[in-house]
Length: 326
Image (tube, rainbow, N blue to C red; front, top):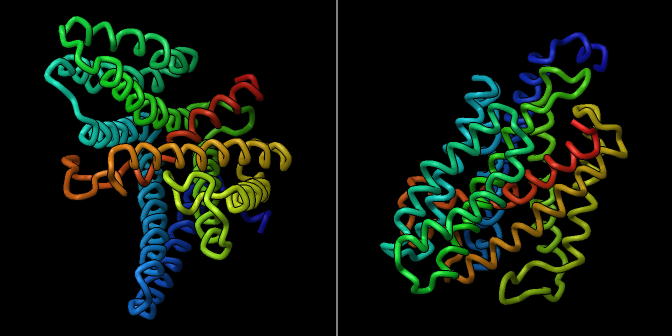
């Protein structure tokens, strides 16, 4: 098998990866569908957990499809595609965050200046500027534009919500296609594996955490935010997903120990970021982004599908750049 894989070109190896991924997703989806038919008479709690698992499964399908399209059409198209994902995610976030007339200019700046500039910087590989453009320059510019609108009512709260939305939806997502543009020695044409590694370990962490919490009955750490999050389930999920990352080292430019460490970093950031996004949903009084028919994006619940990745991607990206000096 190893000799067969080595005989393939990088493009053929990545293509084989997607064949395997979509095949596994198809098998899991069919199994989940059969289980849902058998368990349709179970109690509401069981049905809710099954819906949560199906949501995770839909996330895996969506992200795999996005990555496949991006890889097939090239790095620039992939970055533009993720820019569209960021646009709809930010729109979904803003839709559920009350705004005033005085926020109009700031919103125009966020959607039609900040977002395209951030992804253009990614395409041009200006990674140092990608790092500071939003958290430094944009975070200073947004309140200035808002102040010029002459509307001081709830000024701090309104600007904080917009800045937070930009940070999660634009800054976070922009680091996913940035991984495709990193240049590792002797790793040309294989960066899709690096993106797959990130998504797979983060999704594995979320799925393992869901399954462990389903079996282990532990007191939640923050019950007003999440009834399921506890340190035991979280630690088991992070460790399991990190070991999975170690097993995937051959797909990456990492050695096994490095792969475990990078997977650990991604899983910690992604899982805790998911908890933060749950807190935001509780603050807004919703259970899912785009719920209750209030989403106008046409992609209801998009943030539910990418929230962990929004936190994991920038931490993972900068950890890789720092460690390898690229």
